[in-house]
Image (cartoon, one colour):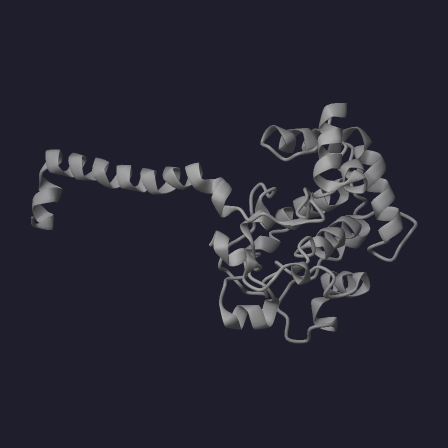
Length: 249
């Protein structure tokens, strides 16, 4: 059938458009019925390794999105040798299961950040965000000096956690949910995911981590560096045999 015939015949155009939409819809919907078999099981000692973000890390992620960092950095290492050599083990679906939205993408004006956590010191990240060219001379990344000046706003952190809980992120609000997290992640992590202690946990992590190097206040820099430092650190690949995660691909 000629393309012109389809374009000039309303009946054919509507019918074939519906066929294309149906195929596209099936491609989007059908995989959801098999999603449990495609998300890797990542357990060490019977506990899940991949956890939701702590309140401080979550605020850092919010700032990361607000500043548009995702427009130049992806968070998805592909299963290719060159990517593994540069960045490390390819990204697992399990590592993004609590991301809303996920930060995958293919646009890399800057390097992929999926495994940037613990690769550099807090001091390096702070300096890099304040003046990128002071640590990476060829960088075209803009300066973000206001992160060090802006006091971190977190009075709405409880509401943010509750919103994520509504879409399936296992933050705990009840005693039963807390106990379920203890069983799933261990007591230490479960306490960090307790919505009722959100502000207390945020303040504690910020003060102990001192991510921006200034203990006098808690800034947006503290939160953003805390987020960057956790990326790619939840899975200890040395605990798994080579090829363990290939069965999920």
